[in-house]
Length: 113
Length: 113
Image (cartoon, rainbow over all chains, first blue to last red; front, side, top):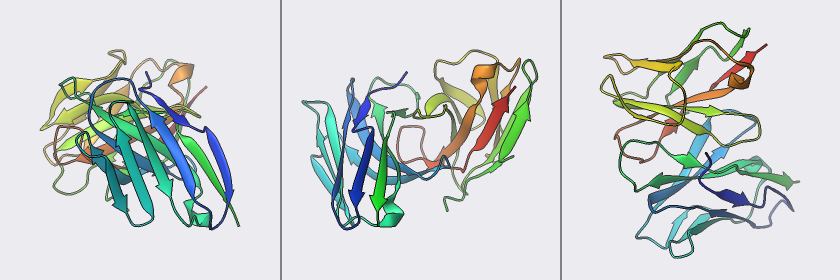
């Protein structure tokens, strides 16, 4: 079953604008990760934020985590056409055991040139 | 490029048949996880192998089975295929058993007719 949901399901913006995607989850976590997927191919890891961190940056990416609200956001600044893809958040749940990552349904981002 | 490869890229089977999908992990990674991604959904965790032993499993029936070899390559076997097994199958390798960053292959797209 899916852990949570990304919001919005789809987002279309102009090149150069900023894109913000949100993720909500249900259980306690060790970390939360964001992945990108182009055209139904493999996922590419973007960034990992641990449960004791509140914000993290990587290049044009900024991720926030609010464990009290069980939510995270991914901000992509100065978007480019190459950023067009589906973006997924994934949680490593802290329930113990090797149960893999739990993914949301994703946000499909379209950058208009 | 994540260094993780999968074969074949596409496969068509009929209901009731059996299928074997293959994955070659990134060099040095001793943990491999398999995920099923239905169209329009996020990946769902099938199982994880660490040092040739299954050490975690998602909500998938026993007809989904796997193997990991001493060189850390792995296989996913699915018996008695059903129409709902049509999906993109992704393998991901990682250094640790826990839910740290996972490196995904490009996937195998399976169509069951």
